[in-house]
Image 1 (tube, rainbow, N blue to C red):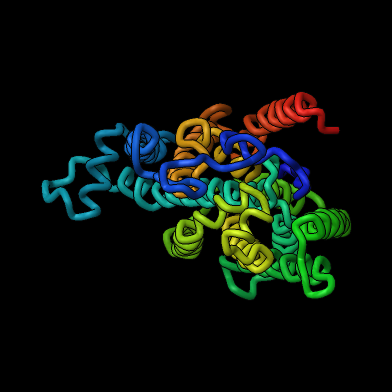
Image 2: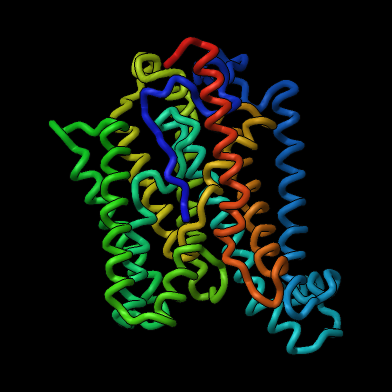
Length: 387
């Protein structure tokens, strides 16, 4: 299940690590987040990026080595480099192991890395847009719409697009939910974060109810198990031919967000300050919400609704690199990729030969963190005399 985090735009505390009253770090450049690449903090940022990049490579090798058939890491490395044309020597491994590594585990590891990176980046941006540390990627009900689309395919046996029918239906459900939420929240030509979040929560609740009704009306047994497995999130069954869409969506989303990192920094300082510095807050928020929702919809369609990744990782990242989104976004992408690859490894090995849905493990990690975060923010609010 995914986290349903309260995200009132009136919250006074910004994302953790963002400074007093949610203000971003001040560098030497005279603007929020200035001097992102200079001084000790810039050096720490470089070290963190290098460390996370190395960790991601090692995690990918581990993800391809671990499973019902264990493949030595050195052999995994040889198979991968040989497939990439970097190693011209004669293969010393069996054809079966090469198939396991390249056709079964490698796509799964890559989907985990892409999904983790995308959810972490979307979560960091969403927390800045609504100025609330409890915001997460599924805030606008996109996951509920995607779940309804997927359940419809499972219950009614729709196969219009063959093996891609479930993913296509999930993305269509996410897209229609986004349109419904925006239509509901738009009043007088304006969309405020409060109305948008409330519309997302309301639409998500209705769509979840319809999903449960469909499941109850359909056949029991295999359908119920298939729906439950999908709604808990998972990376199994992915193939190379389906990886390009989530990969392209995450690359595009991260690229656009990096170009607007300064605007995200300005929002953390408050709407009035951002407007004074030349940011059209309403238009910027609307465009970013659309972008983030579309990226989230693609990821949910590919891997199901995997919760808490976009809530946990942005806060962990800010502890190391500060609140400037020019540092937070790339670091969150790498950290999210590493986290979800290892969560999937644990899902495959903790209860072997049975595989635990990866969303269950992320919830077990994220639930306690979410409760701690709420208590921490409540303590800060009490210390400032805020009700």
